[in-house]
Length: 96
Image (cartoon, rainbow, N blue to C red; front, side):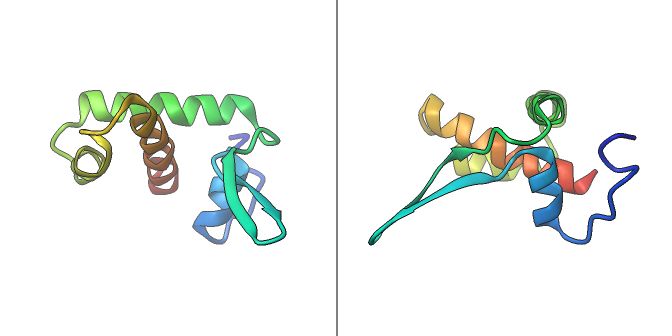
């Protein structure tokens, strides 16, 4: 109720921002990159979304999102899998 009850979310970027799953941009001169996941939003919603994503991988192995994650991040290092789980959490949060 706290996440979707009071907000009129119009697009996926607003859902990601409210859930705290967007990257923090860094730009200085000609250098521009993303620092990581923003920490300014709802921490409990972000933690819940990541937990749902891990459970999604575990209990829904035949679903299209799980297949996408396995093809893209499943054979990478643990760092890439952690990056991928944030992307999967975004997709699951948007789908829900």
